[in-house]
Image (cartoon, rainbow, N blue to C red):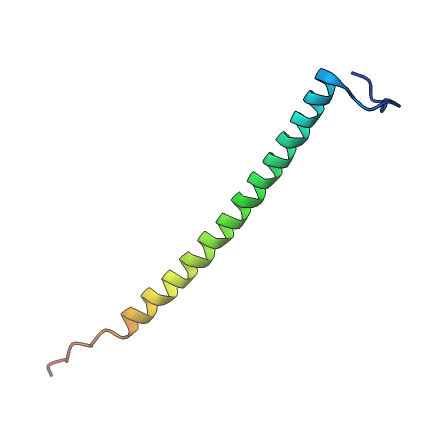
Amino acid sequence: MSSQQPSEPLRGEAAFRAAKERVQKANEAAYARGRKERAADAADAAGRRRTAERQARENLPKQPHAH
């Protein structure tokens, strides 16, 4: 494969392979973005869950102490 861009547009099998490669790269980029967004969403949800659990523990009734 040469590193030079052809002066004529790709045709036939070469055009198909180039289009397929562009779609593959776009899909990989979208997958990576989705993975990053889901990780951020999961981290936010975990933080909210920890906060809610901590508040629930703080609101539990206290046992009276016998003296």
